[in-house]
Image (tube, rainbow, N blue to C red):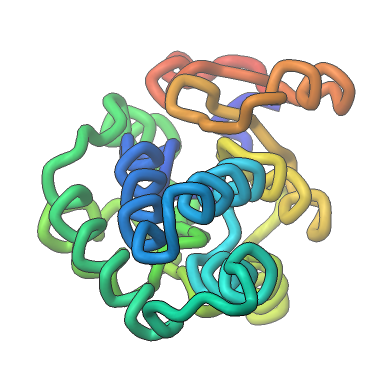
Length: 221
């Protein structure tokens, strides 16, 4: 199929629309530092191995599994607040993907929506401030709802029309797309998924570097 054949296009945000993966990785590291450098490194490793999963689940895992039992430090809410403050500044200024408007013009009848692991309120504020909201007529969705739940809900409501395409940059994005039988394209340029080449080859996933590479109605699946 070609890009123009899809009735719905679902976008991840971090690493797809915004070059924000590194910002969030550093924010996780800084938020966890009160628990020590080793704990912070372990959280970063867990975060990069589990791209696409919400901050809520990652910090819960951190406190339950990566922090020494006898160590005291910030609560879950304090960790989330520290992380959010660091991320907000970065999202306002990081690069956005080139070619979004051109892609929109190439398939104007398609419904576009965002399904992200990022905080939904934060996402909507950032997209509004950067003038991106009008592109996504299907809505902008994020955590605390999980991507699996977001896609299932939007499929059930009829917001996602088939055939549909998911554009992501993580293993979890692919898992989520498979759960609803949605075609998937992996965008590699900003991804932090270290094993992406092996994973995409094993699962016969179409790989492009950036959204801009989809311009020209290329063959996808």
